[in-house]
Length: 382
Image (cartoon, rainbow, N blue to C red):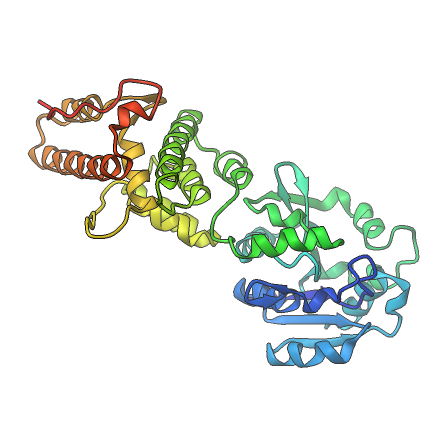
């Protein structure tokens, strides 16, 4: 039988520090409350309970439209733990586990919730916390057997006090999700999160580091190669933007850092893209998917995918090199495999096309713009 898991969304507070009513603040296309409900739904949690109090009538239509359940907390003025207890008391005795998530942590990624569920189904933990770069965040996933303890708790520090008592049975799970730590207590917090809400499909530099290091444990040589590719790609993009292009430097940086995250897997470009799509990084995944083989449309403006492709072909290990050197190394490894040599030559020609497009836009040779390492000569590889 599948585990029965619920989500308790805490939306009863006064929003006193924010001045605005946090559950209904827009974050991109959705309000904070809508985002939290949709995140839980996308992650596979069907039993979603929204604890309301202050201005509850304004929230009830939103909750109903999204198929969640209202739990009204008459004692909401007593603080957040009163809402936690109201939510926990509403759960059925057959609830195996539940998330507790304040509505102002509205950008937690569905992939984070799914990962906590995966770990819970392995069994045994009292509490499972998501962790980003060594810091615990929200939402904790709490075993249902502790519901009675929480609902009757009269000790200090509310839910934090209960969870401290359960510490010996707790697990932490590393995730590539900086947003488990980001709430919106102040107007500045809100403005920052509103900006983030429009860029959720591009991981931050810190999220890239967490994914490569703490989550996947990628080889350091691959990580350093990605750092050089990201540096080169963003330097080239910045130069192109100065002459009228509109290239996304954040997207290029993330794709450069992550393009080889599945390097040891067969068809590593597609394998890496699949991992990124599952994590919610769709835009980054599209670039990673095409970094080995790319069809260039010369009638359209330069794209981030082209710059990632070219930068990757200009970095050998951790060293910036010419296309000639890079592809001579590839040919020497496969000189007895005609099909592999055909693919290598096709990739070299694609890189040269992109190089020519960049130079035409810039009005100068790349070797004059990109310091470090031997630059790209124009002669054909032998």
